[in-house]
Length: 193
Length: 105
Image (cartoon, rainbow over all chains, first blue to last red; front, side, top):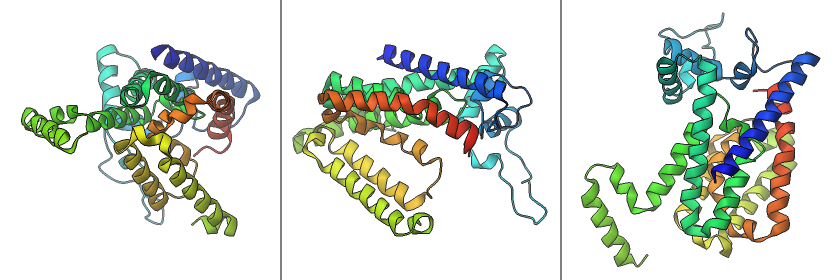
């Protein structure tokens, strides 16, 4: 399982890095303003700068507006868990935001693949579950599982929750866990599934 | 909304996609994923149709449907699973060029 994930990350990293080099050499337009162009800031293109802002300075207390008074895109459109996680890793290790963001996202991508496997294998068997993981890891948009972006955290949480929700384990994550677990088990056995 | 971008063809495209998605979910092969995964995927499909505009992020927003890749019919058929894997890998550089250099959001 983890071999599939590692191979896929190696492939995507190679693709991203070579396209980064080609694009730099040919002077293509880049998705984000490049004050410090390297592979990690490249992995933090698009809206990652908003996550960086949340991690380093928090949310703005005053909303930016244009001349007509309309509110401009700003960090309030982005949720805090991913940038706070990255900030924690940065604080502990001293690594810069974009590098830490790529590391955290890649690790969470592995956990997402693992969660997908654990959700599926009891239902469809190991063979089908491994193919699902392979297609998930090698998918056309799989770079999102390693970009400095909240997607891998979201996938991991969602898949792990799906699994917890479809097994009696869900009760361990809510108040009155053991009691509701017994209740759920008896509910299951009464319904005959 | 679909009509605004592609006219009648856009509306037809959305209807065909929705029907295809419904057919995929209702197949016998997906019985092992019932009821939770299938019900969740159907709800998420409805949510995407109801809430999102056609935009670059749409494909990224399909990621939560990943559990459907556990469809046993995919792993059972050699041409299908290999075709999907090779197709995915081939599309990776295309998507990177499109989203990181040309039509970036």
